[in-house]
Image (cartoon, rainbow, N blue to C red; front, top):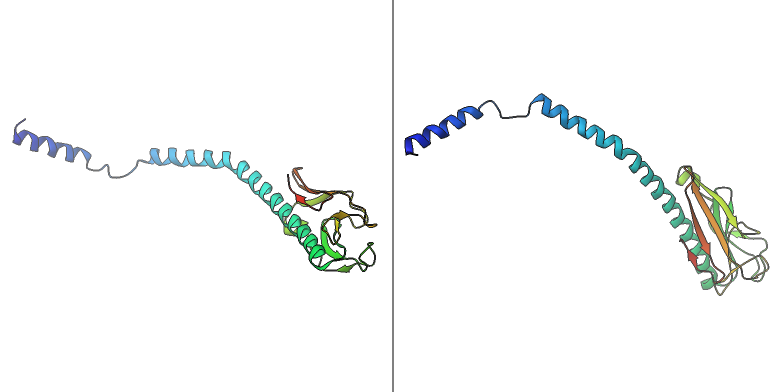
Length: 176
C-alpha cells in the first residue's frame, strides 16, 4: 500500500467509528438483567451466611464467658459458674468454696436473643442446679456437690441450625 492509500484507509476507519462512543440501550438492558439475576441468586446465600455468623458469634461469646468463669475460679479460688435461664446467662460465685449455695452475681444477665436476633439457648445438658457449668479452684467442671462432670450447651437459630458448647470434666471449653 502506498502512503496515500494508507492515509485514506485510516481516515475512512475513523469516520466509520464516529457516533459509536457509548453503549447501546440493548447492551445496557442486557447488563442490568444479568446483574438482577445474579443478585436474586446470591441473596439467599448471603442471608444464610449472616445467620451462621450470628450463631457462631453467640457461641463464641458464651464460650468466652464460660472460660472467664473458669479463670476466676482458678485465680481467686472457690466455685464460679455460668447460670443460664431461658435465653439469658450470667456469671455467679458460690458463697462457700465446697458446695453451691447462696450465689452472688458477678455479671448482669446477658440476653442472647436480643444481642443475636433469632437465637435461643436450646438445651443445657447436665447443668443442674444452675443450668450451666460450675468450676472449682482447680478449674474442673463440677456439680453443686463438687462432683466432677461435663456440661453441653446447645444454641439454635430460628432456621433450626444448632451449635454445641462442650465443657468437659477437666473444665476445657470446646466448640466443635
